Length: 314
Image 1 (cartoon, helix red, strand yellow):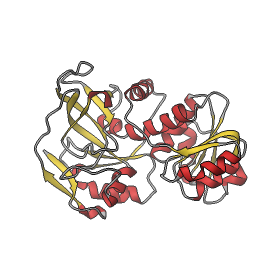
Image 2 (image 1 turned 135 degrees about the horizontal axis):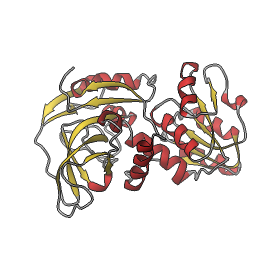
Image 3 (image 1 turned 60 degrees about the horizontal axis):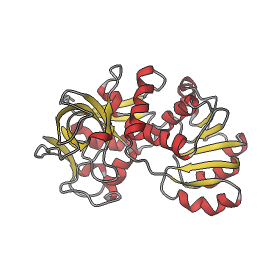
């Protein structure tokens, strides 16, 4: 099978297409023929530094996939060959989504809604699960609350806006002016251009902040939260704010997304109903993974970047 591996940890140019043996599913796993693979910040961060944990040899990047089950391992009963599936796999261990085939636990997948293409489905799992786990499992958002989403037009952000609205919240997003129409179409009630206005002066009495930016944004976000509010930091380092937040009567900390079968099934229902939409800005063939990483690292993507794996053209 074709796969993409970094020959060393470093810049996008280290990504190289190689031929590897097709994997076999272990008990409780499935083998999936990958049609498309989502590109996420953790992919280029892992490419640059080696990631959270030791990788296999050779390392194969990627955690988001959409494809078709080819084979099931011993004991698997929830999926069968021929099922169209999408999922977020094995994180933080190597998943190997940048390849023509991938194996992973069956419960890291959900059935792909028929009204969503493989390219669209591959853009969903990591980002949508991050937003779901931040809003539902961590912050416990409920109707009538005010939710501020930083980087609201990005991969996680554009799902967080929609899911917060689904949960009945008043949603405020930060993004450049050119993206305000996109966010209002997703349901944002207020949008702030962070390049022109300091969000600290533009909003207050917020119940929940989803911070996908990090750095100074976390500490500044504490100033707009009401007592009893929640700051969910997605970039590593959010735990540094815990003592300061505690003094203010605010709950804060770093959250790392996990594979989640139940969450994936709930997201699939929302995709099928049309209540949740995915924005795919760029689709590139697997062989152009380095270009996908360069685009992602620019920080200007609206929505997601996807690698088309089943299609060899381009």
